[in-house]
Length: 144
Length: 223
Image (cartoon, each protein chain N blue to C red):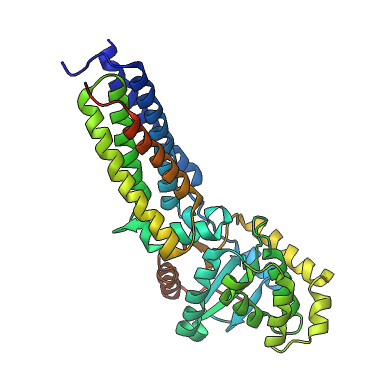
């Protein structure tokens, strides 16, 4: 049996995590579409945003980082959903996905602060979501 | 039944993301803009500044905003292309200052005021080159005055002209031109009346390809 009954608090925490990951997924998808249509360059008129999303750090071999972000958020969303429904293994995968995203977030914050000297509001929002997810991983009760 | 819930939720969200992404892409995809020949002949009288050989085989036409970072990014490559193609290429610039940019209209007025003294392109190049500086300066008008001095303008006349009706009318004519053609973003660049996307890492690449293609095509009368 892969599922088990679990504390209500855990269901709530993973529910929140799934919702946060879904928001991040929507944002990453939006940024990927902007990249594909060339609108990243416009960035709503924000020079800092253009400086970050138009920089060489915003893509890996021509693929926008936001596309990788969308995949990561989707993984986190799926794992959190399964974990909320009591799938035990999903908790481990969720934690793995979140820590990987956390490491990537630290790197991108470093790039914005020290290499580009410009902050993109989309990236900061995404960072906030990932900090929230990391907080949930830390706060969720340990397995019985 | 409850066991299948997470699968259903994940599948639904995946569908929603793919479908929503595709719809957003279709909505945001830039339309293929073309300019009619009639529009070209009209604008040369009413709006737009021309640099290069008036009889050049290829016309590069930009609708730009001096405060827009991508416009700044594309200005260098355009200048290089002008040097590279010489008499084969002429460049036309139209103002399209966006409302979201605080000083874009002031900058357009500064360029036009310089134009009244026959120094439009010097101011144009200076505004793009110094974009990172003046866009972050609160006293932008004073900086423009110093630019005017730098390129040898009559400063008193420049200060008068910058808010003059002639300058404003010219910018409005450019904006009307943009509306007529369907321009909604900056920079919008046309090569022989066909829009070319410059939203790439190296904007010179698509521009060069379009210029080369235009040079190979049967000759178009630009006069």
